[in-house]
Every structure is written in C-alpha cells, then in structure tokens.
Image (cartoon, rainbow, N blue to C red; front, top):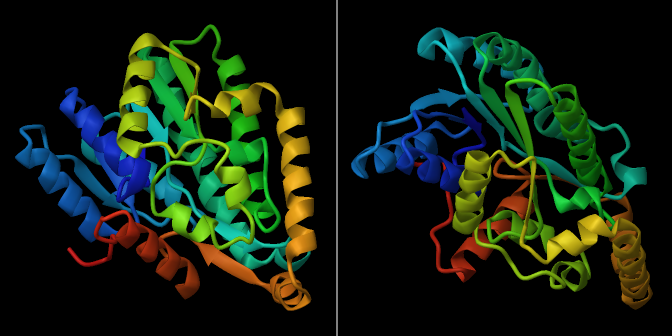
Length: 299
C-alpha cells in the first residue's frame, strides 16, 4: 500500500514497484489521478493497482483505509507512508490552528494509525515492511516552515523508535529522508523569501531516481535512505547544518523590507495539492516551468 500515490514521489514509486512485480494498493485524495495511474501501470503490462480514495488529513480516515484495504485484498505486506501535507507560516501565527492540526494528522497521526492497524498482522504472518517518508526538514528548517518540519521530525523519531522495537522482528522498517526533489512542492516551498539559499546547497533530486533507490533499498533490507546524496552531510552533521541555515536566515531577514516582514508575520497558508490558492498556483507554475502538465483533479 502506497499513500499519497497520485503525484510526485508516490506516483513514481508505484510505477517502480509495479514494474518489479508488486501488487499494489494506491491511495490519495484525488481518485481521477489514481485511476489514471492504475491505467498507466496496467498499460505497461503490470497488474492494475487497487484504488482507494482517502483524505488522511481527517481523523479516522487512516483506520478506515486499513480496514477497507485488508477486507478487499486480504493482507498488506508493505506499507509506504508517503502522503504529505503542510502549513506555511511563522510559529507565532500558526500556533495550533486547524491547518497545523491537519498537517499533523496527515504527516504523523495517519501513518501511525496505519502502522497500528497493519503491522501486528505482518508480525503474525512473519513478514512485512514499513517505509516512512520523512524529510530533511527535520534536520534543518526555515522561517515559515516550522510547523511542517515538526511533523516530519515527529515521524522521523517515531520511525527510528519503531525500527528499534522491531530489531528482532520479521517486520523491517525503513526511513526515507528526501532533500529537495523535483516535484510540485518545490513551487510552494520557494514562496518563502530567501529559502533558495538553503535549497540550492543540494542539487535537485529526480523523483523517478528516488523511487528506484527506494525499491533497491527495500530489496537489500536497508533501514535508512537519504537522497540526494549530498543531503547526507547535513543529516550526519546536523549542528553544522543548522548553524549554516540560521546564518542564511539572519542574512535574508536583514535584506527583507518592513512591509514584507509585516505581511509574513500574520500569514498562514495551507500547502499541498489541496492547499490554498496561492500554494496551488505556485505548484502549477513550477510544473509548467519544468515542462510538465500540472496535475489536476480532472481525469
């Protein structure tokens, strides 16, 4: 089962695993895109995935998804928690608003609910794997991204703990930690003033390459995958990475005019494929600039 399979890393991973013979259950909020992906996989000669529409920003959706999938398919041997959403805004503006709670529901609570629902059965069968896709944001965040980074840091800690709890178990646990990858999220991310100074320290990764690396890492039983390769330095030396990011953020703050600072002080924005209009426009503009058709809810 792959959550967040309608676009980006999830979509590429679904195609990669299907090509390697996996029987897939794909889930996301946008059914037309899931059905399009299922048709593409089937046309390539692989078994068409089972499609499950679910909004993991809602409490209880993950549990319902697990129940529906197991009832229809019998078992899930591999769970890939890839679905993601977020909120942009300064910590003092975001606080505990609904947008922040939705981000935690999508990025943290729903993955844990799926783990709780599916992993015990994996243990009973004596086989299974969990892949949690987090983010390098857990190591080095940026002004306006604190709430999102906190969701990924929480999932990262939970994943490390889960791996320790299953060190002698037949269930394998792997954390995938992407740095900047060429998906639509780059458009909305770069709305934050000056963030390109941090992002451009690492070459932009290719989602298809990352999908292949995830599949290969699963085959060899790896517990952690960091991509692009250069991002490994920040993960291994987080104190140095954070020091450099704070230095860059301080420089950007000095260069930002008063009107912009005031506007950013109260801004709160839902991000992701169903985010606020400014986020969606930024995502679509990024896709057009990269020569790709923006993903839409139309089939």
